[in-house]
Image (tube, rainbow, N blue to C red):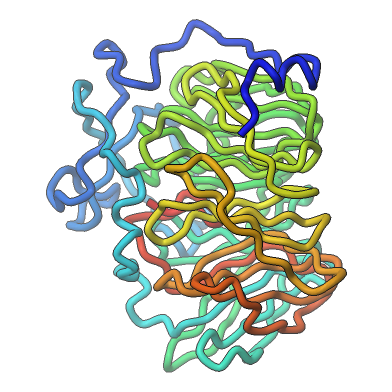
Length: 420
C-alpha cells in the first residue's frame, strides 16, 4: 500500500472540498440518517404499504405528481417515510446479499445473464446454466446500462445521452424475454434508486446535473447542478442521504439528496470510474483507471486515506459474495485483481487471454462465478472465483457494456450492480 503523504507528493494534490454537512457517521441531529437492521423484517414497510423488505432512508420531498403512464416496474403510490434519527446503519450494509438467497420478486426467474450491447441496440440473454446464448432482444439504440428496478420486479435498459428507458421482461421458466413501451428520460446517462425506492436519482452527464425523479411518473422534482464533465458511476451512502458519484474528468463528489447540493468533492489527478461504499459505510473504494488502482476515500469528507495499485485501466468493482474482497477489472491490461479488504492489499491477480478488455461485472447468485463484459471484443468472460480460471468466453452483440446476473440476492436494488 502507498501512504497518503507519498501519494500527494507523487501526484501533486488530490484536493477535497467539503460543504457544511452533517457527519456521515452518527450525527444525532441529522434526522434522515438511519437504516434498519436488515435482519429485522418489521423495521419499516415498503413504499407501497404492503408487507415486504425493510427499508428506510432520508426524507425527500416530491412535487405533486402529474397524470402520466406509469412504467410496469412500479405502480403509482402515495409514500410515507418513517425514520429513527438516532439509529445507525447495520455493521454490514450488504448483509442481505451475503446469503445468496434470491430476492423474492425473482423467485420464478431462471438463472440468466443479460448484456446490453450499446453499438447495435440489443440485449443478449445467456442461459447461466448452459452458458449458451438463449435469445437476443432489440432495445433502444445505444443502450449500455441494465438497471433492475428497486424491487427487482422490473429491468430497465438505459440509453445514455438519449435517455431512453426500455423495460425488459426477463425470462422465466414459462416465458421468454420481451420488451415493453419505452420511456423518455431525456439526458439520462445513469440511473439509481434511493433506499426506500420512492425516488429515482438520474445522472445527466451532458447537462452536468443530477435530477431527483418520481419513478411513478418519471417527472423530475428537483435538480442539483454538478459542474464536472464525465459524470457516471455512483453508489449511495450507508444511510442513503448522499449519492457518491465519479466524473471521468477527475472528480469524486458527494451529493446531498435531501438538501439538493454538493456536500463534498475531491479533485483527483487520475480518471475515477467505478465506486463502491464499504460494508461498514465509512470508506469509499474508487477504481481509478488513470492511476491503475483503487483509491480508498473517507466517506465523510472524501479525503484519500490509501491507494492500492491493481493494474492498468482499473475500471469496474465487484464485491465478493461474502463481501470480504473486491474484484477489480483492469481493462487496459486484461486482468482481475483480488483486493482483500481486511489486508488492504491485492492478494491475487487473474490474467485473462491476451487482448482481453474486462469491463462491467456481476456475480452469480452463489458468488462462484464472476461475469465480465468485454466491450472491445464483443464477448463476455465467465471466471471461477475460487480458482481465478477462465471458464468460458461467450460472444455477444456489438459493444457489450451493461451486464446483470439474475436472480440476485438482496432486499432491494439501487442501480446496476448495486443491491443491499
